[in-house]
Length: 88
Length: 183
Image (tube, rainbow over all chains, first blue to last red; front, side, top):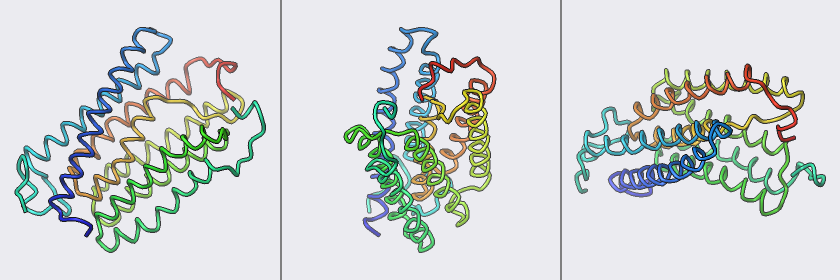
């Protein structure tokens, strides 16, 4: 074990949440640019829509972990439930 | 590009891409030993190398067609290995892993169809698939950490099915402009 499970789950949350938000912003900017180009950029538009969808699903996943707990934890300890988990 | 000057396939970028396969044995060991944190960091390392090879190719100006194909093979093999290993050890559900693998093979088939239509070796550029592959890269981490595993795996199945269907139509049925496809 490199760190306690509590901090590891927080690390996962920061990474997944941070990347999802960053991804959402990035693809939203790209989508605006591609939409301005119209039909010739339809593959890029579809790609950005898929990217935005994935980013939103990522944010929902992170919120679900913190609001609803992890339904089928593989390694998760009981304290890894709740909005801010239970401090160790 | 490769057309401007001959570039050997033995170059720094391909070395970085090939080094991704070195993450597989440690990952298998960490999973079998139950060392889930190290398993997740191994997946993370593989993902970093995935991003690094493109950067190295630009810095050393050594982009090749072979490199892009090797990169796609490394993506499929490494990320596939991660999730199949996790499923084999019961850390993630089997059904989405099987569906993801089958959809990956279907996509590979349509890529060969597209290459035949173009008439030369080429890697179909799919902006949407790039996003889904990035998600697939995360699956090894989600499964290793036990982080909302069912949700993220089934979500990936949903996104992959839509993108494979869209790309299959583009590759197999839509008209192609051979001259516009990069060599």
